[in-house]
Image 1 (tube, helix red, strand yellow):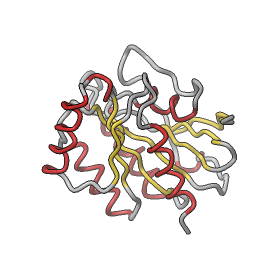
Image 2: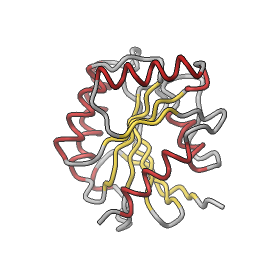
Image 3: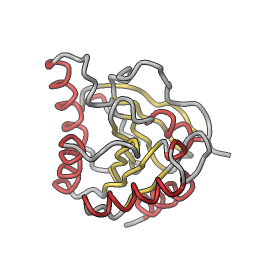
Image 4: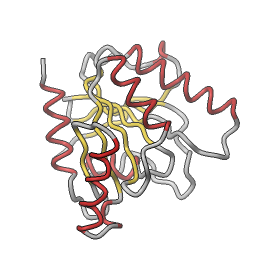
Length: 190
């Protein structure tokens, strides 16, 4: 049984919880299915799934089995947010990523049907800059047939060099175990 406990939500680095545990952070476009994926990994509802994209506005920290801290970051790319809010988002995310000493992996949650954009490229480059592995969780794989999914995976291979990418379906639970295994490899790596 998976034990997940909410720790706190915050914006500023001075307020981040000091647990001493490894951290895994999840980031993605506002409508990519990040909350559903987190709930699928936890095997319980911990992240709020909203019909309105862009609801998460704080960094939320969760104790995951006393093994690591799962960090749910606000979604990006939500058109109705003001430029000021988008700038605040960028500062909050960069502040966390550049100060998180225990960060073991960054999970970029992306709808498998979307194309790689400048936003995803920026996250990939930032991940490389801080030396933290990037894992791409390609959500909503259940919306494609098996052949369509294979074609999308080939297109990703042609467009971007991504070592760790996993098609997942929160609805059908497909691919979630493979993603979790990879995350635990990063958590346990010295």
